[in-house]
Image 1 (cartoon, rainbow, N blue to C red):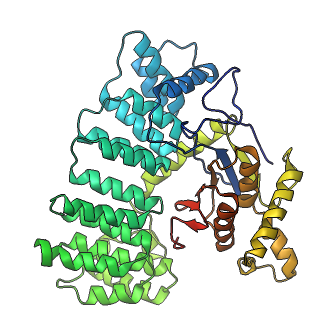
Image 2: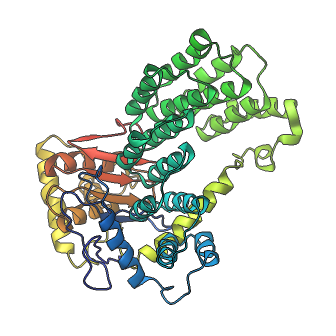
Image 3: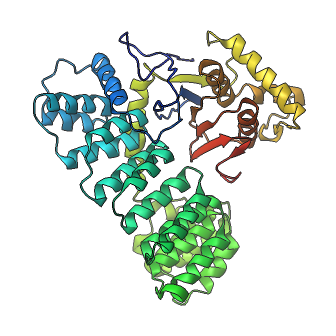
Length: 470
């Protein structure tokens, strides 16, 4: 089933949302969600001139929140605010902040920073911008939280604006900003930021090198990572700790370079720890190298059998301690999706070409785009389909009407020309969708922001921010 309700951000004359047609200085309106069905969700947004903060626009959004809030009759209290944050209801929490402010009460900074983190976890960009307006950053930590918030929402432009306006920065600021860029497919820019960090006279420490290794994983560039690892001691006198060895091992193995990871471990200046063996064990199993994984499982048992989890002893990849936190974030996004689906989200399922009121136009748009793509040399990647009984033409038809592409076509039809928009998918992007969206971005002259299960992709002018590595 496809559920579609249009939305707007700025001008509200009715207590409901519809598709936005903001001016070029408008804020973008994007929220994130996940689904247990193979669904792609799409919401339009305007991303031009995001460097200009318009408080009045955010206040207009807040007024609309009041209209649709189910808590409009509740007496605003700090306890109400805390309860809403606990439930992941950031929009209602923002309303409570405004109403408390009207009554002369001010929500303390730690609570506002907690709300900022909640907006980042829920990937609620418009709400995040309203929270930003409510916060007067008093220290570096507050600025860092805002950068993390925008990173979670996928807005590197907003994050960079916060970074640029900071009167002072610490190492954590640079680490957060570099990770933000890497998560959004801008790994090269993140490496350039590390260069800027050093150019400003800052001395790298172990924490920023961890961020560099994280960036190298996003780029799939192990050579860059190894060069930085070597420079730790050679250029800065940082003696690698076991934690650093674990970071480099994870960088190599996560990129699929298991042979290089094994060689690195064998050449370590110290005996590998349990953490090193466990890292290689899990990632070897993830990449299908069962024998290598079993080998390191035995080594891990010899080092400390008491720390081997039940799953690891059974030959399964054990859950990390951080996985529980990730599950909590997923639950926050799930709750957010259930509420947002009633107001702003458009949902599509693969192959459903009849449910949408504009289905005929969407199908026609995709067929027209396909003709143009074929003229430009596009070749559908039918190898991603494993139905041997299907003919090549039938496979191409199924690929053409994938949920991702239906959402993109609807976004093109439902938003102003040349405006960017966002699509969200609960699966990892396949190579055919990736190639298709790159070509559509070139044909239509639009930036298409796509969030799959793993990362953000920014398609523009026929290219993608991930540099075809995801």
